[in-house]
Image (tube, rainbow, N blue to C red; front, side):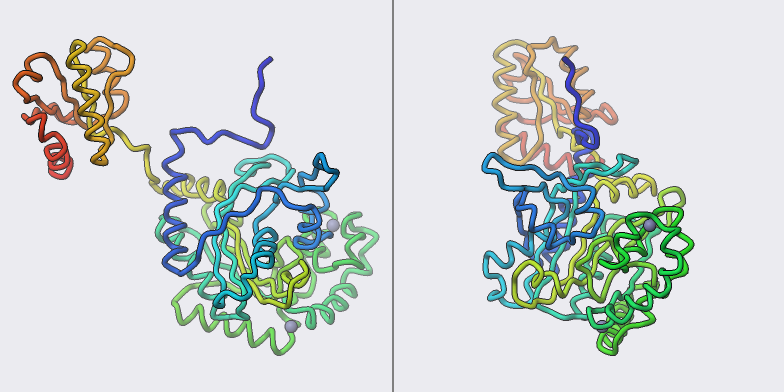
Length: 423
Ligand SMILES: [Zn+2]
Ligand SMILES: [Zn+2]
């Protein structure tokens, strides 16, 4: 029986790994420079965490979660996102007593039972940040600047920042009535999900992707035009902070984000590249989330960045990403004594931090050289009886065929020198 990877999953093969590692390294580096600390959370959590933390009325919870009963009959769910788990950890580990704000970053896989399409998988990767303990908007702007710097360093262009405010419970209660007045006359023409959400969570109706609902959602009044004074001040503050940092943005009243826990600031980085338009990264403030998971009132803000989407975007924009590293040297041996010497030298080089390869297949010299060329090795060194008795050899640069005499005892130094001087 042939077994394939489950639909919506995929293998990330060695040829693609360098680009992944580059993104991971850069993200960790930027986060560290901002004072964010890495956190690692479990792959699955109690289902209730996501029902409370992501929201019962969201698509994620209603339609997309991988939920199962474990052998102890507890309902468990593979995390569909990172924030709820990080909040759970924040509470469980007493991070409220850490110096504020608590700033965390993560690199996780997440799971959603979604329709599989280009760049969208059922098991996918997210980089994310969460900040607890500050109302902002200074924190909001810092978080956005972190992403801006990450995109800059990885070389992502043709991307715009869109920001919006979706207010607080105070302004949202008033706004919900205005929104419902707008929707009510058209409810009978709208999809069952929208009808279901009309009383429970009318704001969610604005995200509805059903064609029949578009005429109503597109003309809906914007929450940004109905903010309470505190939320208005907060939003003006964010705009001011971004201006001070020289970060360009567009105010987009249409951004509401797909999760229930957001308050005030919401933002997206959107690709403007022809053919790949769409959201690369989204986030927002969630001042009510910690409370809804059972903690004290704690302001927070975060984002999640789809790594598959990011790498797809970089490729579409023709941005060069790291290629798989190649051996600096391949050492070929003719005969058993030389092969043993080759293995010893390779061990020395590897201890010195140099990527080196030797024969492991008992190949002929010709086959060894063919293999060396396939690995992309920059130099080759052929050892035979003469080289071993004289303690010298010739490092051949594969790019131009030029040969450099070396003493085998000084191979590390010679290679390091040649690597620097030989393009
Ligand atoms: Zn408000
Ligand atoms: Zn609808």
